[in-house]
Image 1 (spheres, rainbow, N blue to C red):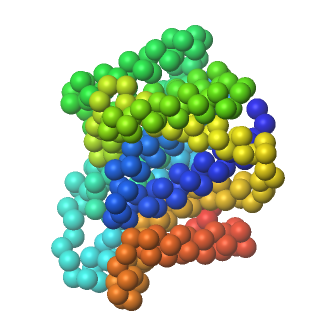
Image 2 (cartoon, rainbow, N blue to C red; image 1 turned 135 degrees about the horizontal axis):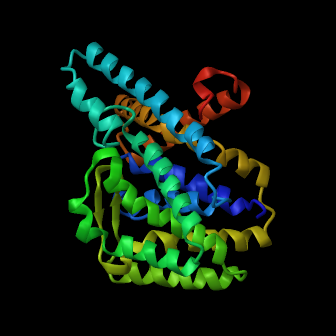
Length: 315
């Protein structure tokens, strides 16, 4: 499958939504209605093989950055407590939640990193299922059942190794793979179907809430499919625009390649933006968002020019 610029456009939108989602904005609930499941869906969409041959590559791309930057985040958190003369968090509990439960509620700068091991495990399980099950219909049915009834069984799931998070992530990865296999050649038709479902959810105030990192998933019935249809609507409209306009594909591909950098470093730049905004007396969410993106863009420029620096090795 030839790489489409629509994928890179979607990646840019998603990592900007991650930055915005961790700033206090009026759009918090709308962002959490789709952005985390969308990443899982896109990961499944980009999975090219049903074999386990890419597990090693996934480990290098996901688990190593998780370990490296979680340690970095813990060090920064302890240094901050030391400088501000605050009480240190209980280390054993903190380490358990970071490395065993993969919990996003841990009060340190790596709180977003739970996503990386959960994505690794979700892709591993999805690949195992794809090896065993050839039927696209059966995969779709299994994924739908897992999502639809998640609200009924999630309270019985252990948090150990993020099991409660993995079981809501796997269906989105599988749906991403299924969509790639079955996607319609007519983008307008795909867009029309997808946007109709999205519109109905909005019309009937049935927008879900996905804070998977803290195991908080709220939805009503089929509205749990809202992020899937929103992503397919966006992909379809971007494909339509790509066919009609001359998009800067190389620039978009470059921007898309910075998704891990934005993901890892945005808690730090958001905090810096917050401090700068308060210092200037401009405590407004849009100002903090723009500042954070500017700081992240500076990191991107440095990465392009100094890509051999150790700090950029895994982003």
